[in-house]
Amino acid sequence: MSVLLLTHPSGLAHDTGPGHPERIARLRAVAGALAHPDFSGLMREEAPAATEAELGRVHPQAYIDRVLGTRPEPGRFVHLDPDTVMSAGSAEAALHAAGGAIAAVDAVESGRATRAFVATRPPGHHAEPARSMGFCLFSNAAIAALHARAAHGRQRVAVVDFDVHHGNGTQAAAWEDADFFFGSSHQYPFYPGTGGAGERGAHGQIVNAPLAAGQGRAAFETAWTGRILPALDAFRPDSIIISAGFDAHRDDPLAQLMLDADDFAWVTDAILAVAARHTEGRVVSLLEGGYDLDALAASTATHVRRLLAG
Image (cartoon, rainbow, N blue to C red):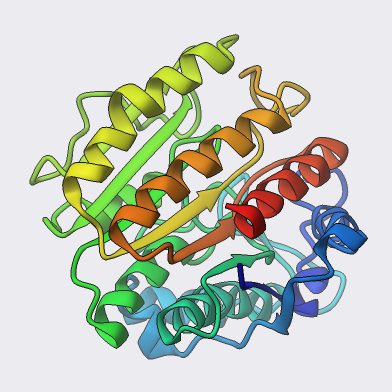
């Protein structure tokens, strides 16, 4: 199985300041895990920068200008909200995070790879079309999905998200689009306050499977096998993007779900089974959350092993 790993050193220059959970060490932990000999078969490339036109499939120009125009002097920080911080290297990192998602789509659609994993930061699934939040600047998964449609003719696009926090930004991008499926499991009620089961999109193409704090494998598997996967199958996607957040791990400091790395292996296999039926196995996976460094490294490694083997 040909799997492409995309990353970029600009992610190491996105400094969020002392004590911030979405920190540079996250990317180093992922890189260290994927340096193991188990991953010698990965194709490895640097993520290019997205163009403003590509970002504009989701974000209005005024918002793009605001983010890209925020470039503080080295050592200084700009808080876009209480959680979302930009430093001198943040705009460039955000461009490469979105560009990596786009390049991953191009690679799987061209047949150069069957699957791709994009290890970049900042993450993206909380970024709404005109608002940054939750550590996120550009809506990378939604940008990737709409690129698959615009550049490769994949009309029916899907994003599935197992980050512990609801992907409100992806949901906002998909809400009015009948051919854009979004499915998410997440802790609820919890940040960002969205993701109730009754939030179904303008065309019923959004499936939210909320989980209570303290729930673990049984509830997680039920959410996917009982709700998200059957709906994804019925949607018959032409393209599948995974928002791969690993903060539902029991050791993560920002949430209270009780998953282990094996649970991320299970859900990856389940998504790949749907991809085998509808997209000839093509899948793009994007790193989202995960804030305990050991759990993040182990969970990412497990996920990418399944991409290689599945």
